[in-house]
Image (cartoon, rainbow, N blue to C red):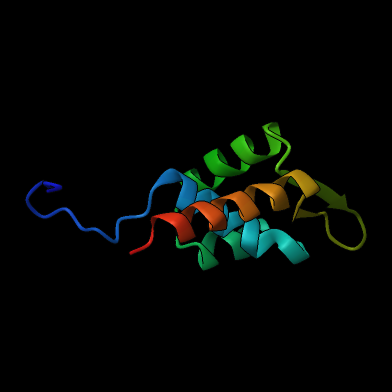
Length: 95
């Protein structure tokens, strides 16, 4: 039987869950602020995850110049592969 700490929730998101959520939202391309709000992350958490995902080449940062300087994040092919494996593992582990 799995024991859990007092007050711990089984719905607590892990790092992989957060990364998958970011990659899913960025599939069509999105701004950093939109990612932050839609993933329910703080600014600092968003920065950490975006840095990790771009370093691992799961996410691509595109800079659009025009009237305003805009950073757009988009999921790479490698990121889409990560999502497929993530969903497969979740399906295997679900009751």
